[in-house]
Length: 266
Image 1 (cartoon, helix red, strand yellow):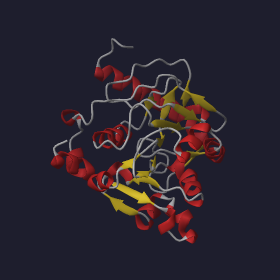
Image 2 (tube, rainbow, N blue to C red):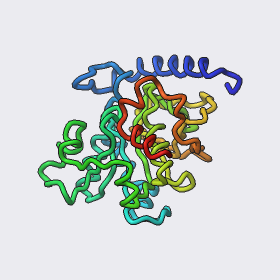
Image 3 (cartoon, one colour):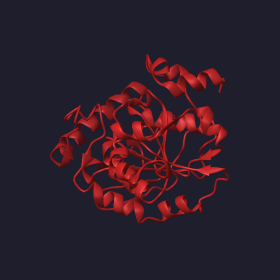
Image 4 (cartoon, helix red, strand yellow):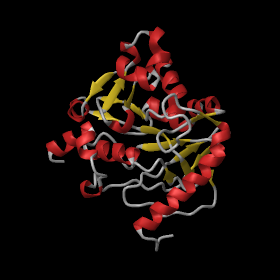
Protein backbone atom coordinates (compact mmCIF):
# COMPACT_ATOMS: atom_id res chain seq x y z
CA UNK A 1 0.00 0.00 0.00
CA UNK A 2 2.89 2.39 0.74
CA UNK A 3 3.91 2.36 -2.95
CA UNK A 4 0.57 3.73 -4.12
CA UNK A 5 0.44 7.26 -5.45
CA UNK A 6 -1.82 9.86 -3.81
CA UNK A 7 -4.32 9.46 -6.63
CA UNK A 8 -4.33 5.67 -6.22
CA UNK A 9 -4.81 6.00 -2.46
CA UNK A 10 -7.78 8.31 -2.99
CA UNK A 11 -9.26 5.86 -5.48
CA UNK A 12 -8.78 3.01 -3.02
CA UNK A 13 -10.47 4.99 -0.25
CA UNK A 14 -13.33 5.82 -2.58
CA UNK A 15 -13.82 2.16 -3.49
CA UNK A 16 -13.79 1.16 0.19
CA UNK A 17 -16.36 3.82 1.06
CA UNK A 18 -18.76 2.60 -1.62
CA UNK A 19 -18.47 -1.00 -0.46
CA UNK A 20 -19.06 -0.07 3.17
CA UNK A 21 -21.92 2.30 2.38
CA UNK A 22 -23.81 -0.53 0.69
CA UNK A 23 -23.66 -2.45 3.98
CA UNK A 24 -24.47 0.66 6.00
CA UNK A 25 -27.70 1.50 4.17
CA UNK A 26 -29.85 -1.19 5.90
CA UNK A 27 -28.79 -0.09 9.42
CA UNK A 28 -28.40 3.68 8.91
CA UNK A 29 -30.92 6.44 9.49
CA UNK A 30 -31.46 8.90 6.60
CA UNK A 31 -30.55 12.55 6.98
CA UNK A 32 -33.32 15.15 6.84
CA UNK A 33 -31.55 16.98 4.00
CA UNK A 34 -29.24 14.50 2.32
CA UNK A 35 -31.42 11.39 2.65
CA UNK A 36 -29.09 8.40 1.90
CA UNK A 37 -26.25 10.33 0.27
CA UNK A 38 -23.43 9.19 2.59
CA UNK A 39 -20.95 11.32 0.63
CA UNK A 40 -22.61 14.40 2.16
CA UNK A 41 -23.15 13.41 5.80
CA UNK A 42 -22.07 10.93 8.46
CA UNK A 43 -25.09 8.81 9.27
CA UNK A 44 -26.60 7.85 12.58
CA UNK A 45 -27.24 4.12 12.84
CA UNK A 46 -29.03 1.39 14.76
CA UNK A 47 -27.26 0.86 18.06
CA UNK A 48 -25.64 4.29 18.34
CA UNK A 49 -27.19 4.56 21.80
CA UNK A 50 -25.03 1.58 22.79
CA UNK A 51 -21.98 3.32 21.32
CA UNK A 52 -22.74 6.34 23.49
CA UNK A 53 -23.10 4.18 26.59
CA UNK A 54 -19.76 2.47 25.87
CA UNK A 55 -18.07 5.87 25.59
CA UNK A 56 -19.54 7.16 28.85
CA UNK A 57 -18.38 4.01 30.66
CA UNK A 58 -14.86 4.05 29.20
CA UNK A 59 -11.63 4.86 31.01
CA UNK A 60 -10.53 7.25 28.25
CA UNK A 61 -13.70 9.30 28.74
CA UNK A 62 -13.41 9.38 32.53
CA UNK A 63 -9.73 10.36 32.32
CA UNK A 64 -10.46 13.19 29.90
CA UNK A 65 -13.30 14.60 31.99
CA UNK A 66 -11.42 14.25 35.29
CA UNK A 67 -8.24 15.82 33.96
CA UNK A 68 -6.17 12.69 34.45
CA UNK A 69 -4.80 12.71 30.89
CA UNK A 70 -2.66 15.83 31.14
CA UNK A 71 -2.76 19.26 29.58
CA UNK A 72 -2.35 22.33 31.75
CA UNK A 73 -4.86 24.95 30.65
CA UNK A 74 -7.37 27.41 32.02
CA UNK A 75 -10.23 25.50 30.39
CA UNK A 76 -10.58 21.89 29.28
CA UNK A 77 -13.13 21.21 26.56
CA UNK A 78 -14.01 18.04 24.69
CA UNK A 79 -14.50 18.31 20.93
CA UNK A 80 -17.39 16.59 19.15
CA UNK A 81 -18.00 16.81 15.42
CA UNK A 82 -21.56 17.66 14.28
CA UNK A 83 -22.06 14.17 12.81
CA UNK A 84 -25.49 12.55 13.11
CA UNK A 85 -24.17 9.48 14.96
CA UNK A 86 -22.87 11.74 17.76
CA UNK A 87 -26.11 13.57 18.52
CA UNK A 88 -26.87 11.31 21.50
CA UNK A 89 -23.36 11.84 22.86
CA UNK A 90 -23.71 15.62 22.57
CA UNK A 91 -26.98 15.42 24.50
CA UNK A 92 -25.45 13.24 27.21
CA UNK A 93 -22.55 15.67 27.63
CA UNK A 94 -25.00 18.52 28.16
CA UNK A 95 -27.00 16.58 30.74
CA UNK A 96 -23.76 15.77 32.59
CA UNK A 97 -22.77 19.44 32.66
CA UNK A 98 -19.75 18.81 30.39
CA UNK A 99 -19.05 21.68 27.96
CA UNK A 100 -17.66 20.91 24.52
CA UNK A 101 -16.61 22.42 21.23
CA UNK A 102 -18.19 21.55 17.91
CA UNK A 103 -18.23 22.97 14.39
CA UNK A 104 -20.89 23.90 11.89
CA UNK A 105 -21.52 21.73 8.84
CA UNK A 106 -18.39 21.83 6.67
CA UNK A 107 -16.76 24.10 9.31
CA UNK A 108 -18.06 27.02 7.23
CA UNK A 109 -19.13 29.16 10.18
CA UNK A 110 -16.40 27.84 12.43
CA UNK A 111 -16.41 26.62 16.02
CA UNK A 112 -19.17 26.80 18.62
CA UNK A 113 -18.97 26.30 22.37
CA UNK A 114 -21.83 24.37 23.94
CA UNK A 115 -21.81 25.18 27.65
CA UNK A 116 -24.68 23.52 29.53
CA UNK A 117 -24.42 26.18 32.25
CA UNK A 118 -25.51 28.76 29.66
CA UNK A 119 -28.29 26.70 28.02
CA UNK A 120 -31.71 26.07 29.52
CA UNK A 121 -32.04 22.36 30.30
CA UNK A 122 -35.30 22.22 28.35
CA UNK A 123 -33.27 23.00 25.22
CA UNK A 124 -30.59 20.32 25.61
CA UNK A 125 -32.18 17.98 23.05
CA UNK A 126 -32.42 20.79 20.53
CA UNK A 127 -28.92 22.07 21.31
CA UNK A 128 -27.48 18.62 20.55
CA UNK A 129 -28.77 18.75 16.97
CA UNK A 130 -26.98 20.30 14.01
CA UNK A 131 -29.61 23.04 13.73
CA UNK A 132 -29.90 23.69 17.46
CA UNK A 133 -26.23 23.80 18.43
CA UNK A 134 -25.67 27.00 16.50
CA UNK A 135 -28.65 28.73 18.09
CA UNK A 136 -28.00 27.53 21.64
CA UNK A 137 -24.20 27.65 21.55
CA UNK A 138 -21.69 30.49 21.47
CA UNK A 139 -19.56 31.17 18.42
CA UNK A 140 -15.84 31.17 19.22
CA UNK A 141 -13.03 32.06 16.86
CA UNK A 142 -9.50 30.67 17.07
CA UNK A 143 -8.31 33.80 18.85
CA UNK A 144 -11.03 33.25 21.47
CA UNK A 145 -9.78 29.71 22.09
CA UNK A 146 -6.27 31.04 22.51
CA UNK A 147 -7.41 33.71 24.96
CA UNK A 148 -9.38 31.12 26.93
CA UNK A 149 -6.25 28.93 27.06
CA UNK A 150 -8.32 25.93 25.97
CA UNK A 151 -6.99 22.39 26.01
CA UNK A 152 -8.87 19.59 24.24
CA UNK A 153 -8.02 16.18 25.74
CA UNK A 154 -10.49 14.14 23.66
CA UNK A 155 -11.93 14.50 20.16
CA UNK A 156 -14.91 12.51 18.84
CA UNK A 157 -15.76 11.99 15.20
CA UNK A 158 -17.96 9.87 13.01
CA UNK A 159 -16.58 8.56 9.74
CA UNK A 160 -17.62 6.73 6.59
CA UNK A 161 -15.42 3.73 7.39
CA UNK A 162 -12.32 2.95 9.42
CA UNK A 163 -9.81 0.11 9.57
CA UNK A 164 -8.69 -1.57 12.79
CA UNK A 165 -5.50 0.51 12.79
CA UNK A 166 -7.53 3.70 13.23
CA UNK A 167 -7.17 4.99 9.66
CA UNK A 168 -10.41 6.69 8.63
CA UNK A 169 -12.15 6.61 5.27
CA UNK A 170 -14.39 9.67 5.70
CA UNK A 171 -16.59 11.45 3.17
CA UNK A 172 -13.44 12.55 1.40
CA UNK A 173 -13.49 16.22 2.37
CA UNK A 174 -10.90 16.04 5.16
CA UNK A 175 -12.83 18.17 7.67
CA UNK A 176 -11.72 16.31 10.79
CA UNK A 177 -8.10 16.50 9.69
CA UNK A 178 -8.54 20.26 9.20
CA UNK A 179 -10.07 20.61 12.66
CA UNK A 180 -7.10 18.76 14.14
CA UNK A 181 -4.66 20.89 12.13
CA UNK A 182 -6.21 24.17 13.20
CA UNK A 183 -6.48 23.26 16.88
CA UNK A 184 -2.94 21.91 16.94
CA UNK A 185 -1.59 25.03 15.27
CA UNK A 186 -3.02 27.23 18.04
CA UNK A 187 -1.84 24.67 20.63
CA UNK A 188 -5.28 23.69 21.92
CA UNK A 189 -4.37 20.04 21.50
CA UNK A 190 -1.28 18.03 22.32
CA UNK A 191 -0.37 15.24 19.88
CA UNK A 192 1.15 13.28 22.77
CA UNK A 193 -1.93 13.34 25.01
CA UNK A 194 -5.01 14.36 22.99
CA UNK A 195 -6.87 11.21 21.95
CA UNK A 196 -9.25 10.79 19.01
CA UNK A 197 -12.28 8.51 19.06
CA UNK A 198 -14.17 7.30 15.98
CA UNK A 199 -17.79 6.18 16.36
CA UNK A 200 -19.08 3.76 13.72
CA UNK A 201 -21.40 0.81 13.17
CA UNK A 202 -19.81 -2.62 13.04
CA UNK A 203 -20.27 -2.72 9.26
CA UNK A 204 -18.06 0.37 8.96
CA UNK A 205 -15.12 -1.27 10.75
CA UNK A 206 -12.70 -2.96 8.36
CA UNK A 207 -10.48 -5.57 9.99
CA UNK A 208 -7.31 -6.66 8.23
CA UNK A 209 -7.48 -3.90 5.61
CA UNK A 210 -4.07 -2.22 5.59
CA UNK A 211 -3.60 1.36 4.54
CA UNK A 212 -0.69 3.69 5.24
CA UNK A 213 -2.03 7.01 6.53
CA UNK A 214 -1.12 10.13 4.61
CA UNK A 215 0.87 12.90 6.29
CA UNK A 216 -2.30 14.84 7.21
CA UNK A 217 -4.39 11.85 8.35
CA UNK A 218 -5.48 11.98 11.99
CA UNK A 219 -5.39 8.35 13.10
CA UNK A 220 -7.85 7.45 15.88
CA UNK A 221 -6.79 6.03 19.23
CA UNK A 222 -10.12 4.35 19.90
CA UNK A 223 -12.91 2.95 17.74
CA UNK A 224 -16.34 2.59 19.33
CA UNK A 225 -18.97 0.57 17.49
CA UNK A 226 -22.48 -0.45 18.42
CA UNK A 227 -21.03 -3.54 20.15
CA UNK A 228 -17.48 -2.86 21.38
CA UNK A 229 -14.52 -0.59 22.01
CA UNK A 230 -11.27 -1.17 20.13
CA UNK A 231 -8.02 0.47 21.30
CA UNK A 232 -5.43 1.28 18.62
CA UNK A 233 -1.76 1.14 19.54
CA UNK A 234 0.60 3.89 18.36
CA UNK A 235 -2.06 5.94 16.60
CA UNK A 236 -0.04 8.52 14.68
CA UNK A 237 -1.09 12.15 14.79
CA UNK A 238 -0.13 14.67 12.10
CA UNK A 239 2.26 17.49 12.96
CA UNK A 240 2.19 19.23 9.57
CA UNK A 241 -0.50 21.77 10.45
CA UNK A 242 -2.63 23.04 7.59
CA UNK A 243 -1.21 22.13 4.19
CA UNK A 244 -2.32 25.30 2.44
CA UNK A 245 -1.30 24.18 -1.03
CA UNK A 246 -3.29 20.96 -0.64
CA UNK A 247 -6.61 22.61 0.24
CA UNK A 248 -9.47 21.93 -2.14
CA UNK A 249 -10.57 24.95 -4.23
CA UNK A 250 -12.81 27.27 -2.23
CA UNK A 251 -11.93 25.91 1.21
CA UNK A 252 -9.89 28.93 2.28
CA UNK A 253 -12.68 31.28 1.19
CA UNK A 254 -15.54 29.19 2.61
CA UNK A 255 -14.15 27.96 5.95
CA UNK A 256 -14.13 30.86 8.39
CA UNK A 257 -11.43 29.65 10.84
CA UNK A 258 -9.09 28.74 7.99
CA UNK A 259 -9.20 32.33 6.77
CA UNK A 260 -8.61 33.50 10.35
CA UNK A 261 -5.63 31.20 10.76
CA UNK A 262 -4.13 32.43 7.50
CA UNK A 263 -4.61 36.02 8.65
CA UNK A 264 -2.87 35.17 11.93
CA UNK A 265 0.12 34.02 9.90
CA UNK A 266 0.28 30.62 11.61
